[in-house]
Image (cartoon, rainbow, N blue to C red):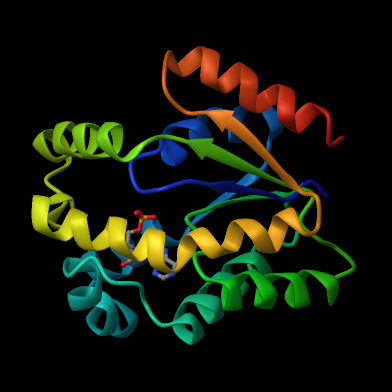
Length: 190
Ligand code: AMP
């Protein structure tokens, strides 16, 4: 299996690059943000529990997120590997993922960090909001999400750096060029 974490702040291009990666490497894509949004639009029990949290730009509690992610992995026993997009967002999630994958005789092969500065993120998300209409792309909610990223999620990097798994890729520029650099990083893992 090839299990990858695509890491970066909101608006770094994780969704865009994931879409291209799953096609090239035939991996299964798990975006916890997409999953939560799906639950909310289907008005499921889980959706009801997390709706306000997402609207406020806060992180969903680890226990809920980890359980949902593990179920999704279990639902895909035939997968050649996974791209984890937007997960893990806390060190507790990263640790839980390692334990979970180890239990299956697997692990995370590599982490690709899309490096994008705050100014660019704010600009991109303002543009995205015009088309996506995502409530959490609103300016004040975005600030909360960026705050969550720099207070909690950023600590996931040293966790994986200690395992020598992180490759940093410049996330600013032409999408194809970024994709090539991401692929080069992945090909070194195989
Ligand atoms: P995203 O689409 O990845 O930007 O995620 C949208 C929102 O979903 C985030 O702002 C959080 O409220 C929630 N979310 C997504 N993934 C996670 C996660 N791994 N842990 C906690 N909350 C998450």
